[in-house]
Each structure stands twice: as C-alpha cells, then as structure tokens.
Amino acid sequence: MTPDRLEKRLAEILPPDAFSTDVAECLAYGVDNSKRSGQAAAVVFPRNTEDVVQVVRLCNRHNIALIPRGRGTGTAAAVVPQGGEIVLCTSRMNRIVSIDTANRLVVCQPGVLNQQLQDALAEHGFFWPPDPTSAAICSIGGNLAVNSAGPRAVKYGTPRENTLGLTAVTGAGEIIHTGTRTTKGVVGYDLTRLLIGSEGTLAIITEATLKLTPKPEAVMTFRALYRSEAAATEAIVAVMQHAEIPSALEFMDARAVQLANEYGALGLPADTQAMLMVEFDGSGTVLDALQPLLSGRFPVDGLLDLQVAKTGVEKHKLWAARKALSPCLRSLAPGKINEDVVVPVSRLPELLAALRAISQRFDIPIVNFGHAGNGNIHVNILYHPENPAHASVIDDCLAAMFDAVLQLGGTLSGEHGIGLVKRDFLPLELSPVVLGLMRKIKQQFDPKNILNPGKAIPPEFVGG
Ligand SMILES: Cc1cc2nc3c(=O)[nH]c(=O)nc-3n(C[C@H](O)[C@H](O)[C@H](O)COP(=O)(O)OP(=O)(O)OC[C@H]3O[C@@H](n4cnc5c(N)ncnc54)[C@H](O)[C@@H]3O)c2cc1C
Image 1 (cartoon, rainbow, N blue to C red):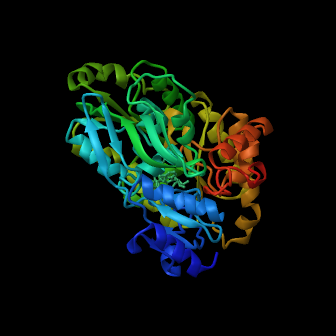
Image 2 (image 1 turned 60 degrees about the vertical axis):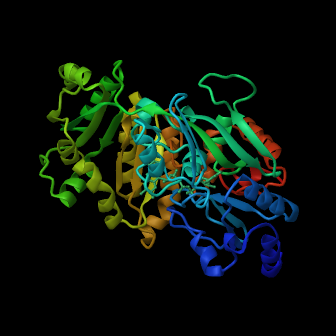
Image 3 (image 1 turned 180 degrees about the vertical axis):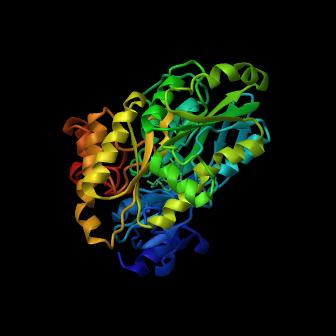
C-alpha cells in the first residue's frame, strides 16, 4: 500500500494524533536495546482494546505486518521492523484500571510501566514480583510478552507465575479473555501462559489481571567474596538446597568482580575471584532469628569475606559492586552481546568452565554475572564488530556457547526472549515436532501471519 493510502486508511479508524507516517518518527520507533534498527511504514498509538481491534483488522484486510511495541527496551530486536510494518505502540494504554487488595489482584493496561505499577501497589502494601532492572522504562505488556523477570524470580517466579488472566486481540482481530480472577481454575487450555512469552506473535495484550504479593517487612542482604568461582558455585548450591529460598541470588565471575572493583574503586580484596549477593526477605524478627543459620550456608573452602546488611545504607554499599558493572561493561565494549542462558543450578560450575574455554578458543573476552539462583547467567561477550578477528568468529562463538548450554540441560534464554537475534538458533533446542506444533498454534491465532512476523520462530517454520 502506498504511504498516502495507508495514511488515509489509518485516518478512517484513528484520530489524527494517534498515528504517524513521518519517516523520522517511524524510525525512532524501529529500534530497541539490541542496537538494531528498521524502518516502519507507520506507528500507531491506540488508547484501548477497541482501537487495537481496528488496527489489527485493517492490517488483516490489507496484509500489513504489525509489531506490538511497549517501550523498546528489549534486547532481542523483537520490535525492530524488517521493512514496511506498522508499529503499534502501547504507550497511551497506560492506565491502572483497578487495584483489588481483597482478592490480591490488579488490572492494568499494557503500557503501564513496571515501576509505575510497583509505586501504585506499594501504597497498598503489595508488589508485583517481576522486577527487571529496566523497571522504570519498560512496560507491563513487554514484561508479559517476553516473560521478563529479574532477581526476585528465584523466590517469586516470573510473569507466568504472577498473572491471572489477559485480554488480547488475535491476528484475526478477535478479542479473547484468558484465565480467571481467581488463584485456582482449570477450565480450558492455559492460554494465559501461552501468550506470556510469545513475543507479540500470537495476540496483542490489551489488559492484564496480575497477581499481587504482600511487600515483605524486612530484607537481609549478604555479600560473600570467594577465592574461586568453584567455591562460589558450591555456596550457591548450598543456599538453594534449603527451605529458606532467597529473594535474590546474584553471582559475578572473576572478570566481572575485577572490572567492577576497578571501575567503582570498591577496594575489594585483590584475590576475589567471585562474588555472591544474596537477599532473604520476610518478617524482621524471623530474619534476625535466622541470621546465624543463613550465615552458615556461605562458608565453603575459599570464602574470603562475608558481610551482612540490614539497613538501606548498608545494603546500598554492598550492592555497589554489582551496580558498577553495567556502565563499566558498556564503556568497555559498546557492541557487547548480552546473552541470558540458563542451566540447572548444580551445572553452573560446568557452564562457567565451558564459557572460559570458549572465551579462550575464540579469543573474545566474556564476562558473566546474573541470577544464579535460577541458573540464569548473563553472558556478556565483549564483541567489537569493527575488529575483523572478532567478526569472523562471532557466529561460531555463539553457536559453541548455546551448544554447551544445551549439553548441560539448559535453555537458550531465561528472560530476554528470542526475537530476531536468536531465532535461527531455535532448532538447536526445539525438535521439528515441537516447532511444527508452534507453527500450527501460530496459524490458529494469526492466520495471515501479520503479528510480528519473522520474530521468535524461524520463518521456515511458520509458513504462510
Ligand atoms: C537497562 C536495561 C536493563 C534490563 N534488565 C532486564 C532484566 O533485568 N530482566 C529482563 O528480563 N529484561 C531486562 N531488560 C530487557 C527489557 O527491559 C525487557 O525485555 C522488558 O520486558 C521489555 O519491555 P518493553 O516495554 O520495552 O517491551 P518492548 O521491547 O517494546 O517489546 C518486547 C516484546 O514484547 C512484545 N510486546 C510489547 N507489548 C506487547 C503487547 N501489549 N502485546 C503483545 N506483545 C507485546 C513486542 O512485540 C516484543 O516482542 C533490560 C533492558 C534494559 C535496557
């Protein structure tokens, strides 16, 4: 469709300030945190489910691809156009519809920011557990579509465990309501969990009913420094084997500690080869009583230092090393590739050894840190695209990493999703039978393959 005709069609269904075909504006909505970009034909800003239905039906009639977009903070190029799509941005669907503390649920539109929701819930003494570091800048719709989480997932789970139901618009323009408003319910297939993590390829989420959790009274933070990564991973297994599940269990490898130490001038002992940040939450009295027991989980051969923090200031000081890391990595390698692989917790030592070997084999520095309580490690490949030695081996390096992860019983992505950047690796993890079923599911929700085509599933497995 020509730009003029497209503009005319959009004007028939949306007010003038609810869409744009301006090339520069469209380009601004064609980027995400993957550093890739693409040119959309138009960007639309629906206010409610009915607007979304109108846009989907238009796209359906004219075979125009449509990309749902939250705030574009995703890392997998899942919102990046490949040419000529309409980007549907949910930024104006940013209303918290109702907070129902009696039934421990909140209903909100997808464009609400994660932090906006947390702030509103905090006034009632509740929170929604998924807590990506990007909370201040990412949307609930994006969190749901990617099943994004963060440190708290180790205790409280991901969006899949914290969502009761959804309203969504399928690729055929039909409105569906999934799930329940109750914490039990087994009527029909679990379409809520299917839509969560589907990266906008099955339906556009227009409203979510989320499960609330009461805010804990107190948090106790431990920082443990180790002489070796093996000692730290031994302690991770020791912590995770007990009934008191931490509310965060974060790991930094030798290189991560060294970089954070230098960049943040933190004065950590020079022989620190690994660090754990571990939080427990609950009642203050219970945590105080448990402290000696919890402290006893960290001492393995190789423990250099163990500190406990209870006040905000003390905790801030302990987290300084972890917080110094991201800006430091960005300044070292602006083109870095950040993977988020997962392995069973007990296989972490083998994963870290494999990553060390891969780094040496391809001569590319790799820095590892992340949510070790879930076995979810952010593998930061300090890739310099302008370096021909890096460029010639990067694909093999990624393939070797994914191969090692799968050999250890792991999965390619814990929370960042597949998008464009990882889709071609999918057949490494999923069998042709599973990919065939996914293709059929996609066809049922989106018969014309207009919803985020080319993302999350290799195109050859989708069909027309
Ligand atoms: C500094 C920084 C820190 C980060 N930290 C974390 C972290 O700790 N943990 C983590 O998991 N991620 C993290 N991320 C990645 C990112 O923030 C998350 O993936 C986030 O959930 C994306 O939300 P978004 O609103 O930006 O979605 P977008 O990037 O706009 O979209 C992501 C996906 O969701 C789909 N989508 C968006 N809205 C809808 C909808 N309404 N219906 C259907 N599909 C939709 C899109 O099509 C796309 O497939 C981080 C990113 C940055 C920049």
